Length: 294
Image (cartoon, rainbow, N blue to C red; front, side, top):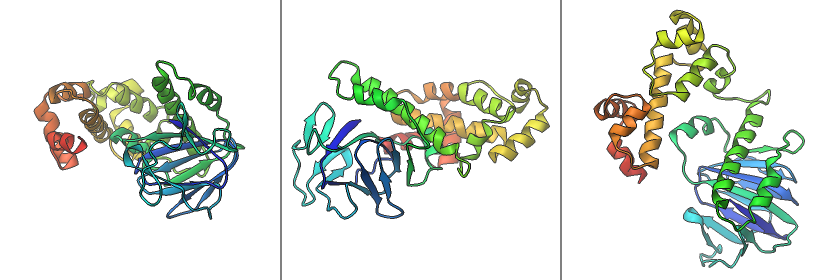
C-alpha cells in the first residue's frame, strides 16, 4: 500500500494487471479513466475499486497526458519507456511529484486473485466507486497514520487494514438496493441457508452430508435441498465440493504443503481423491495447477 501525492497537472497510466486495486481519495480530486467504460471522479472521502486486469489512468483531468507508467511487478517507467529509477519516491511508502501536493490518494493493490476471493470479485464491475455521502469509513485516518510509520510490523498492519477496508467497501456496495450480489452472498442472510453456508465455510474438512447439515439447520433434508438450491443456485453438496476445491486451489498456489496435507485440510481422505475431483472440475491436475501458479 502507498500514499500518492501529486500537484496538477498529473497523470499516471496503470497497466500492472493487478486483479484488484483500491483507491481512497484523502485530499483534492482525481479522475479514474478506464480504457473501456465510464470514467469516475473522486473527491475527498470517495473510494474506487478497479478490478483487473484491464488498464486505466488516474489523473487530475481526463485530458492530462500520462507522465508515468505502472507495469507488472511494481515497475515504474516514463511513457517513452525510460525507467523512473525511484525518481518519484517521496519517503516511506509515499510516491508522486510533491510531498505537499494538493491531491493525496491511498492506493492498495492485491497482486494475486484466489479462487475464494474470485467468487466475490467476479460479481463486481471493472470499476466501481463509493462516494463519501453514502460511505463513511473510519479506517482512512488509521491508514494515513500507519502508512508513514517506518516501524517493525508496518506491512502486516497495513495489509490487515486494507483487508478490512475492502470488506467494508464490498459490504456497502452490495447493500445498495440495486446491487447484484452473488446468490450465495445474498443467501447468507437467510436463517437456514446462511447457517449452512457458514458451517461449510468454517469447517470444510468435516464429513458433511445433507442430513447432518439439515439437522444443524433444524429442517428436513428435502426442505434444505429445495431452499439451498433456490437461493444459492446449486445443491448443498455441489456447493461444498466447489468450496473445498477452491480452498485447495488457493493452498496449492500459496503454500508448499503436500497434496496429502491439503486434501485432509479441505475434507478429502487422500491426495488421490482430491486429485480426481480437482481434475474433474478444473480440467487439470493439482500438480499442473501448482506449476502454472508458480
